[in-house]
Structure formats: C-alpha cells, structure tokens
Length: 94
Image (cartoon, rainbow, N blue to C red; front, side, top):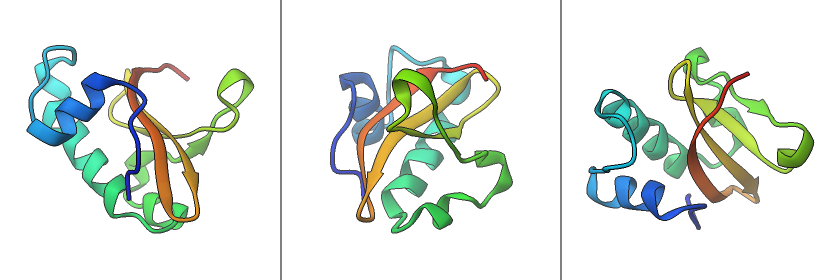
C-alpha cells in the first residue's frame, strides 16, 4: 500500500487521474503502475509484468526501488514491511 508520496504531482495524478506535469502519453500507464504498487504486499508482486523491470537503485537513491513506466519515466519508491513510501514519478534513465 502506498503510505506517502515524494512529490505533489505524483500524489495528484494518483488521486485525480490528472496531471499537468507529466506527458499525456504516460498518464494511463503511470496510473496502472501506481495502482499495482498500491496493491503490492511484497516486492515479488512487482516483478510481473516483466516490463516493470523492478530494480534496486544505487548511489544517492540506494534506499529506493524502481519500476519502469516507459523508456524515459519510472516510479521510484522505498519499500518497507509491505508498504511503499516516498513514491514519485521521475524522468529516469538507466
């Protein structure tokens, strides 16, 4: 379950289905990823579909996990005891 968001834009998108910050082309897919994260009770739940490309991040974001939205955008989050924290959609390149 999502317990907190890392920014207002991600929270607004998940709560209203609308956003001025994110490109219209990723909105539907981003909402599916956020809903999947909200329903997850373990990281295993996020390994499917494979297109999520679940990965632990490194460096300054070493406490975060990532699931891909598309080639440019990803959802990053901290995951503890079955809950997601600091959830944020970011322009993220591998």
